[in-house]
Image (cartoon, rainbow, N blue to C red):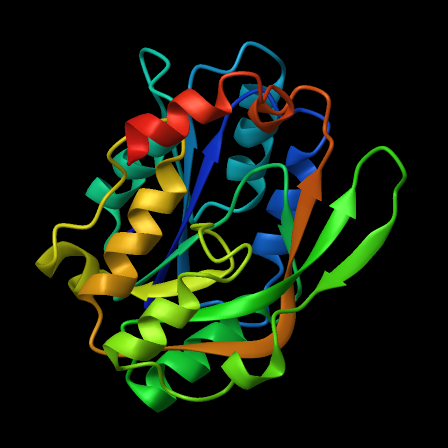
Length: 235
């Protein structure tokens, strides 16, 4: 790919053969097309590699990287960051999917308000019950610039603020502040806290644009017995 793109979409993949096509379809068919799609295959042992290969044939602009050893979610994202060339970065987990205007809405807001990053709302999709519910934080947090220590502290108390997905970031903001994934458990919390603390300004928008899948049997989130130890390590 020779053309410089505005947005780099980084998708780490590990054993998501039942969900991957839905994710990649939602990304490839975005209303905003000035993107590079970077797929990092973290040594999947199911048919995920074959699915990625088929999508790469269908969409030649997809950049697919297969790691030689399993690095985990955080480090797989870091590998994507190393090769990303877009002015802005979007992370999408490979068992989730996004609305058709996901990137367009995020991009237009980060450009309009000149923020370090923008946070969108999301839906929670239960893989067992197949129910889909919108997630909302209190309305007072939406659609205004967050640029003070006081307001940053309030934001850090919100539920679901710590995910790397449902956001668009300025790549220069991440690189200038040395923000990357430092652990492979609770990795999003460290990443987002550092982003919030380092930012000059960011904003939450009300749009529900991301579909977050829960209760997937093979998900790493389904095993929570060691979660407290990972929290301690992150702290």
